[in-house]
Figure: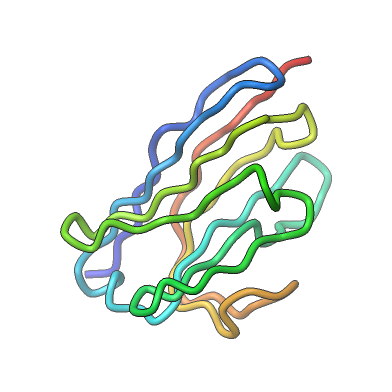
Length: 123
């Protein structure tokens, strides 16, 4: 059964930190590539970060480089996104995704989506 369940979103002031998690079913976690997307009101969904599950190579959107870190815990079938130095423009619904192709870039094809977790950054 394919399942991606996000958690850890919330509200934080600018400059603060949050970590969002994505618990994946074993089948989904066998994907070659997983990642995080976000969608702000009135904007298109965009890729934030991606990671090769086997090798650990990562991709980051320019807007989050140096502030966000994507990581994995293979023992727990869990994907994480650590977000530091948050800005109001990071406010969005954050989605976990699996089976990205390619693994990164502007518009990868996505096989599976989670339902999302809201992140709100106030100034």
